[in-house]
Length: 307
Ligand SMILES: C[S@@+](CC[C@H](N)C(=O)[O-])C[C@H]1O[C@@H](n2cnc3c(N)ncnc32)[C@H](O)[C@@H]1O
Image 1 (tube, rainbow, N blue to C red):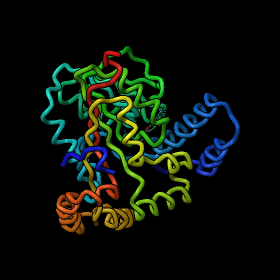
Image 2 (cartoon, helix red, strand yellow):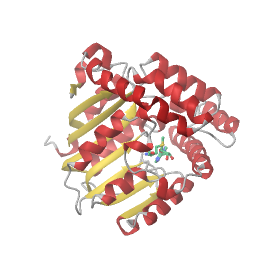
Image 3 (cartoon, rainbow, N blue to C red):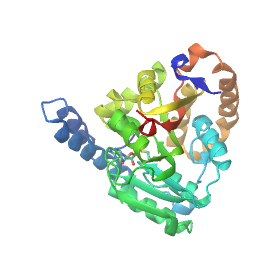
Image 4 (cartoon, rainbow, N blue to C red):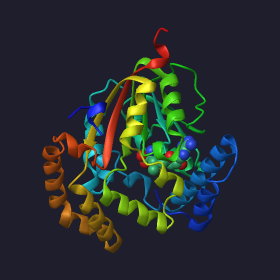
């Protein structure tokens, strides 16, 4: 369900209070560079801690949408299906904010040579192990780099993916960087959440109160205005919207996982039914603004346009 843009509309910190104070300090008069460094340091600490706490065995992490609880799967399943149709063999791919490397390894298993960048060294270490576990370490190059200043030449990649990252960074700066490094015929894919759904926003406020994300991230959650701004860097912006009726079910699943992950099997058929209903409901344009997740395809980077 492609949507024309004009019609459309992260986790446990080891010492959450320290992270949130860092986020609040960002409101001061620091220079923009110092401010950007403080934001990046806060997010590196947050995700280092998330990665250090992860106890899931690497070989048990599914490298497709099934690593998400059933109510959250729709956009990831859409991405899996799209990716399976891409000619990846020996193509060059970039995973911006690769985290623990699930998407990087998924793409590498399709035959591409992947560069994964992240600012969390602990996450990168997990990503390295994941790539080794799946036998693609020679095809996944990981680097401790900031998405706002990518260490790659212009026109380096056929495919670039950024999953769940754009609200942690300077959105316009990273969009420009993606347009710079992607080849003229390449595709950038953003998988992210939108900030217009009031129920999802309750969840965000709760996570902030519990110290599971930063004030910066909550304040910079994507809006339709961000999506419109992508037109400054890309000639084609194609938005696909997911998750409306599934949103309350995400809260139910979060509660069930805390009791025991096996309980997700009980509600899986309900989540599947809600995903199917969403496919119909989100055909109605005014509702798309309230979708929880979007998958955005960006093509024709404007840096190649003749003045
Ligand atoms: C919500 S996680 C998503 C991780 C991964 N893409 C995935 O789908 O599981 C956000 C990731 O963005 C990374 N990140 C945040 N700010 C960044 C920046 N300025 N440059 C590079 N990575 C960044 C974090 O360290 C974290 O790994």
